[in-house]
Image (cartoon, rainbow, N blue to C red; front, side):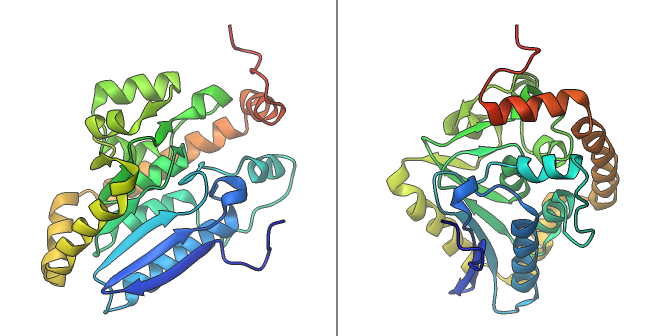
Length: 261
């Protein structure tokens, strides 16, 4: 049974690194409204803390993050109004990408859809070799619109076209070769490889880190905000479509949607 009072994002700080751990394993750490709210609060607290040099984003359970919470999406389509104060995915991705402090993602397992957006938004991402990835949106009748903003900044065009258009599953080694991951390592080396990165950040001057991250991001913050707004419209259009309704129903019923040949 799920404890409704337990936090979905746990926070801790050690040696200048604030760790935010997604802890909603019952739904594979899906980006529910509550998890998004807690993650946004954790990011804000870490960014406001002068003792924090870097942020580590990780998770527990069988997956890193499954993406959007389809049950909440279905409830919204049925007329349940979302809380207007809940941060959306664009806000989360923008916060991570625009943060003055480096954000490192340490994956514990597979990522899908919006979960891959978190991986792409992070400055450095390390995953176990057995982790898998997939942009499953097209297979449930929607478009990987919002996540395209951070993902296209990372992945090479040919691989991106293949995986966006087919929804095919790909492994961590392929993700690293495509630019989505910094490194894919054996499962027993994930923590060690991450600590090597964090130790490097601990040795770096905070102001220099902030300016270097800004240099890497380039003068794209305004263009990125515009892209998120535009892609948000595309996402809303397709999530409200008949195809999306069929895709969600097929997903919950564990059957192929009607368009599969």
